[in-house]
Length: 178
Image (cartoon, rainbow, N blue to C red; front, side, top):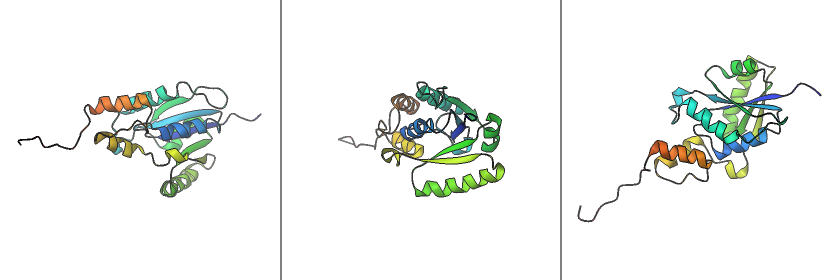
């Protein structure tokens, strides 16, 4: 048997969605050890800070194992992805694709990463059909406007979002006599 394959699934995970969980679940069949890298990405104006996002992902993967039965690691990072991957001794970067528009961006990123380190391969996993439309930014927008996000995120994540936002916003309603 060869060396165990270590893969990194990087992302902001703000918040972690059912789509992310689908990719994580399927990634465990591709690698022996899976490390989920939670990017700080303060420039994106995240709803949750990096420690909260790491905690949410850890809650969701606590029951899962990778291909060789190891627990999945969840690690924050704030440096260049290829430096993070090298520091971990990983051989693969795992990326989820939802649509053709994702592919163009991811293809360019994979090319850049390959130039930085040609020893690390990027593997694309297609999102399952029922998760192809889920994006964290849409989940946040729906939640901010008071919509039901229960189909898009795990229950514990939904609870955290509701707590963070407080009462959901609803369109103003005129009161009789106003």
